[in-house]
Length: 213
Picture 1 (cartoon, helix red, strand yellow):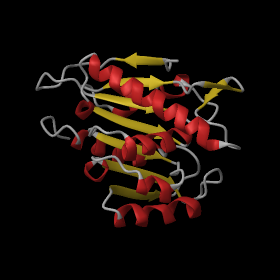
Picture 2 (cartoon, one colour; picture 1 turned 180 degrees about the vertical axis):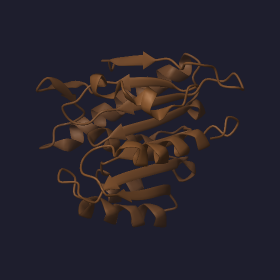
Picture 3 (spheres, helix red, strand yellow; picture 1 turned 30 degrees about the vertical axis):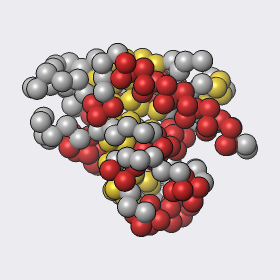
Picture 4 (cartoon, one colour; picture 1 turned 90 degrees about the vertical axis):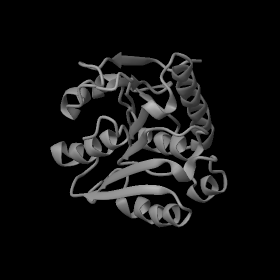
């Protein structure tokens, strides 16, 4: 099984000639259709975008895992995403050229990659999501997890994934030496326009220091 994806290529090359890519994962019930607006909004013209569909059908969209029995789906989707990243590397896009991002369920999958994928990425962005079994994952960190750059953003008014469930997960990550940047925003379960996009944009661009911000 391979994940369906859609590549939106950069509008211009990076000044150093190297490729830069953001792999973006949607939330429950969404699809690549829900993120075609992202490249224009991010306004980073040298960045490729690979929008990825989750593997399971879900009421007209897709799902990364079953909310009732989460572990099997998470493990399956994690391996599919690892395979995707390995395939990109085989095609010439190295992990350090890739930023991984995800919203809600996609955020959880992004954090699975951040903490378990054995190769260092340019960065990982998790939006309005959570970490699955954080105590277990901290016992199973990849050799590069403590070097990985991570940005997590969350809404103080999120009715779907309450911030009270997510914020307590951050301190143990930091105590374990994980480089996670945490931002709370006055928003619900969404991406809060330019306020949040500027945080993401600056974080992503900082992962490619030759280009800068």
